[in-house]
Length: 167
Image (tube, rainbow, N blue to C red; front, side, top):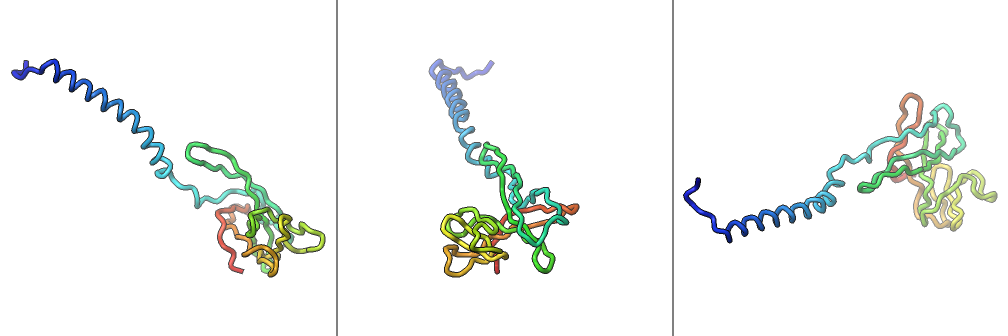
């Protein structure tokens, strides 16, 4: 037995402080984890996604390629469909362009207008791009279409993030 005695008032004070501290920590920890946890998770921004398109099947005519990507926003995980326009240039190199118009973000289409053959066309405001993604002067787009980072694995095309097109 201890030689120091604890009074009833001290015992209640210690007990209430301990219970209150435990309850406060129980409330704060989930909020702290919610704020910090997504920042600590590994970032998959450098990953390349399998498009399912074989390099040997790519021609000189731009082809629309749709592929699926798993996207996580905090704790919400979804599967998102992305699109790219893929073709081989004169040198035989594969080119993958983003379909997002630089004017207002609409989706461009290859030969989307009968008047403008061999061009990407944006139906929203008449934006036009050359085959290499360069915006045609005196049309609404303010810059060229973005390019995708690409890799080839086992003869299949893998796409990564977009980057600025320097044409």
